[in-house]
Length: 349
Image (cartoon, rainbow, N blue to C red; front, top):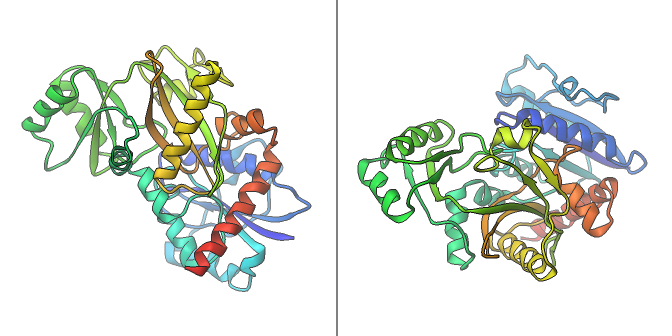
């Protein structure tokens, strides 16, 4: 059997969503193929002792207290792995947002020289930092919203004026590196722009200011490395100005469209566009590509999530099943297989 270690929790604002993802993964991983252990990472970065899957619907039962200091807790985790064969061991870092999708945990797993599923250090870091990924999209001539960015030092009156002149109000203000639409706001004037920019800087050292795109945000699941496949699009339809945290997770008026209906030509263009964005950022394994579909039938890249939600209601696995008739347990097998392939490739470098 393959040894599988499922990491969950983490210090980001998406900690609770990570627990839901991990619980769903643990229920669907093939028990005949994998010997599964879970490891909880708390909000300060302590690793729990590994534990067996729990038969529960309460994701918070995955929370485990560890009174050891951080280095000791991580050392205990490493010690448990020391005799495992990399050819027969896989790590599943089901940690979203900061620490899980920014290259931090990927660098740690690379240092352990063990296979893991999903994107590597570089593509994770690039996609997590929206300023960096926007620069890459621009370099590759992939259409996107007009944007500018600032740090605490450069958030000046001149920057506010430049945003007003180049991007124009209303506009979207967000942290460069954060997830689940946390810290994202719409600004209608310079006073609001300054206020929301200061708020965004609480979550990250860079604030990104973008054009407000009129249209529908669609989500496309992409899997694979050298020949990636893109799913049909899905979408949340909402009365909110944009798909914020409340609209995504709490507003009962938000509707789900799986798939999101568009004509065949536009759907093909959307899927091809998603793959181009995925490749431009060097993604491997899997990702969810979020795209704006404008009223004049154009596509603009919004962002790439390198470890999207795996909760029962999350789009990624549902889009893969809808598009390719691959159920969730089989999808996990494919992602693990891709993880082993990526490890072998990295080992040769």
